[in-house]
Image 1 (cartoon, rainbow, N blue to C red):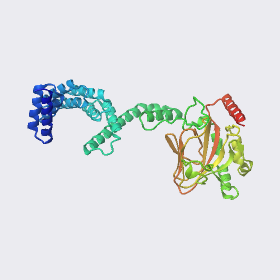
Image 2 (image 1 turned 120 degrees about the horizontal axis):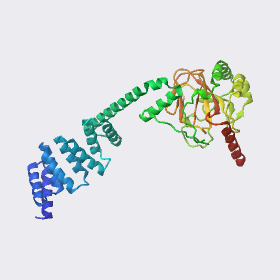
Image 3 (image 1 turned 180 degrees about the horizontal axis):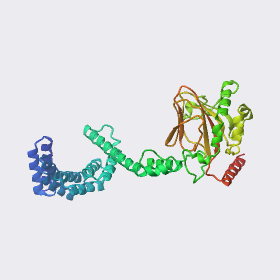
Image 4 (image 1 turned 90 degrees about the horizontal axis):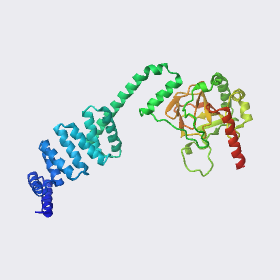
Length: 420
């Protein structure tokens, strides 16, 4: 009997198997092997049948021949790994699974079996790596079976426990060093560890205009860069009094911070467009001093003029009282250029007001100023029932030299002259 005979027996065997006639199916598959002892379909079925009868040794023998005949068939290698697992031979199980993954590194079943093997053998790091791969690949599965859902639950638990062990070990190793570190070094080391452990990302600059290269992308600048912050904070009472007088005077109108021209497509700013939910009272805007506004806040204006503010003709500084209405949200956004830093002096801050820059969220504290890089994604919330008020001031990025600041001004001046 030739190929036709093999096909006839295979067809009969498969019909019998579908009908649940396992003895009949087994007889036909064995007849196939009498003609071609390496025929892979028969070997694979007989191997699975042997596993069902808890004859793992015979199953492994069948699967080995199937793998030899069809070495690029992943399912044969996975079946062989299953047989070796039943036999308690971890290294042969590993070898079979490695063959399956060599064919397709994204084979979910092979990855799951390999993760289980690593876990059984106490190989924690590779087990976590494989379970992570299983979780990543399974994210596209909409309705996993109850059995696979249980596997995914175990994977998440295992990865979480392994991650916590790593976190605990790192924290224990660094505890003395962090205690002895400066506030700057402590903050940077903690952020580095958090990013490495996957607890938060590191945000890069995203400038809509000029991006000056090689400046540190620091979410919140260290106060030591701005030794005059104490003078600004000491004037908080005066500044608040001037702001309250402005807010009480109907003639001193706030303007919407966002005011887009007609026809601009809908965007994240649509909800705030021409709205006083985020209002501003400008003392300076794009480098222009508003004398009438400064006359309403003379102490604030005089103090600002004593500071090393960022001065670029037609562009900076911007100095204004920022009023965020109760219940309002400023969506995540980035600024124009990283040659400047932005100072916030919180003036009126009810409970429930927060400010996020990159991966760090802070609550404003009245009278406590800070500087941040506004070309790193940032957003603000006022979850209270009262308005929040902050004085905002543009200053130079502290990492620029005086010569660089001069060259930046010359660059902008030349560009503006060419544009007319």
